[in-house]
Image (cartoon, rainbow, N blue to C red; front, side):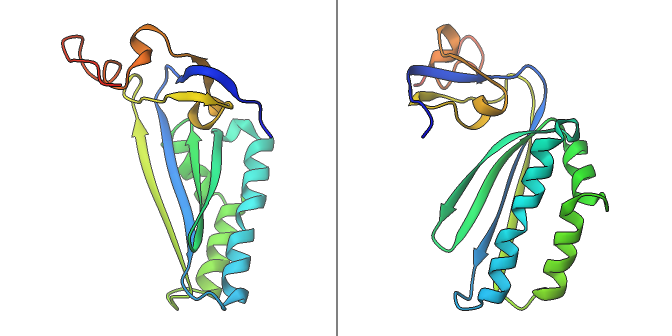
Length: 164
């Protein structure tokens, strides 16, 4: 288990970055032959991305929710994410083709993703009494002091009230 670090921390990144949320939903629980291969397809992609940092993957977290699994991923740029998704030499394109052939629109498994392009200074991350996690694990984990202590000040102007 990761070590809990007491106190308030934040993530620090001075460049634009991408937050990519991706996941699958099991719509037909007993369609094991459909959703198990879909769930297993992500591991080779993550392994490749972690072994090849030049591809632009900064890091991420996996979570499980009722009927599905999702990932929060952090990327250096949208171009890096798109290049990985479309490159025939990378695992994603083949997995996407297998999904469309095996499942297509039969409704047994749902897939989803959301992409957010984040400009420097237009994000907020607070971690209280947590292991290094999320964006801080993908970038820099730093103490939340001064302007970084509140949820509002770093996102707004100096004249706006701070909201924790």
